[in-house]
Image (cartoon, rainbow, N blue to C red; front, side, top):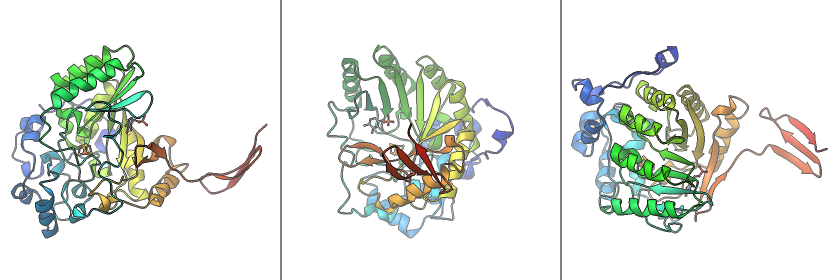
Length: 382
Ligand SMILES: *Cc1c(COP(=O)(O)O)cnc(C)c1O
Ligand code: SF4
């Protein structure tokens, strides 16, 4: 069903509809159906050839990588790709590249030690009061930069139901858990019934305060955010939604409309961007992205340094690039537009913030600081 439009004003006008591209003859009802979008996903070279002008490199990369990590692109997300430009930032995130086949000696199979901190299948419990809960291995689009490549898109995960139960039981038994990050894969790959089951079981735990739904559907399949889904979410507040926009091109009218729908339903929406070479490793692109997110009522939360997972080294930038991006934002634009730049520490150390150094000198009660214009100021502690 085409989405009911919630916000109609001149801000909405600034967001251009993605449109249907080569699917222009498909009826609106079908196009706007997330089930149809899932069924019509591009998974083969024959399908991809129809949507874009595939390069030899992409063809080879697909052949060599598809066994290990599938390609999957929703028609909606495919319309955001430039059919002519292999370096299109959306295309880089969705179509295999030869760089994926390189495994560097510094790469790690499980860089964040998510498996080591797994008390039961489906839960990573690293921090004192919150857990990461894996609810599915599926996603509408398989991001080429995915940190969980070793798990995501793996069809051999027949025991997902068992894993769900063991995760729920763990949370129910661990009274210290007050915050549950519902993750995956993408939890919105699950049916509404399954999602409601999870939310209701979690809300029944007196010790669980908040949940966050970590989903990229706002970016890759906005039609998934249906009236029914939003109706469910409303019953279990406070529900936070964390999404994953990486480039201003992804901020379409369609995305704007579903963000409005979630915000109007009382969700606080945050965004986690992954710093990716060739996609967003540039202060101007990042600033535009952060500004667009704020217009969509989405608060920038994290920028992640690309981690040490295997097969994503071609996306990695120097850490300096991330620091420079924060430097270019802080003070120069709304503080609301400045996320935390973090490195998820290899070996399971968790997220560690990295930022420009604003403390020039500190001695006793004297702090010499510098501002965003690099001018120095002294603060004396009383
Ligand atoms: C990111 C993460 C969280 C949530 O961390 P916040 O900083 O609270 O957003 C929790 N558990 C694990 C294992 C994580 O990787
Ligand atoms: S949506 Fe998230 S879990 Fe799924 S492929 Fe993309 S980055 Fe990985």
